[in-house]
Length: 169
Image (tube, rainbow, N blue to C red):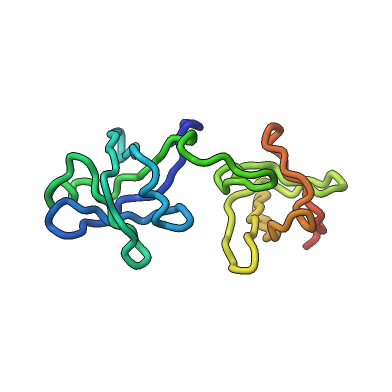
């Protein structure tokens, strides 16, 4: 969704059973947290609908959800490919020095010496630490998101992230 009041949280990827369950590919961590946020705003093409989550559970790497008003396989099948957004206000407030990835994407990145490195395109989860993928034209930099070692300052108000990083690396 283009609206800053909503955050993309997943996508309906299939059907589960004959009673209207839907398989969900969740962007939340852990994946089943998507079931905590209700209602969902579903969008596909120019259509938008709001549906309440009435149940569900984790099923391997997917989540299975039960949605209000979806009671058979045909209704569930019609929802495949719909994106799931939630209201930003549904998320818990992050603690000091914690950030939602969605808030970091698009930030300008510069070194502590003022050298502009580009914008945060996306983040990667490596197991050891998260990594910022910073893009400036054809140049792509992978910068560990380690506070305060590499990431010195996150200024959401000014859309700026200051890092201790060699521009040639």
